[in-house]
Length: 112
Image: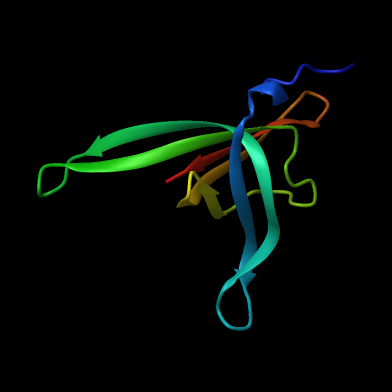
């Protein structure tokens, strides 16, 4: 059975550079890069106000949605960076949404 893609490719128009890191550190103490590519995504910005001692802090967040599996060789998306609209953001959460037959329907990256 073929499952419908919940993130259609025709809605993915935003260019984004995704760099995924795997667990562990390199010999010089830097992150180990397991995936690096420029892709097209459906990107949505969100803004959140957090109260601090100064009474206000605005935090910019974003969600990048990709059709299918962006990195089939990577089992879990545990961290990395994404460059969208010229702004470097950190990957806070990575999700591979799966179909009932365990194939990946879409990938979601939550950025801060």
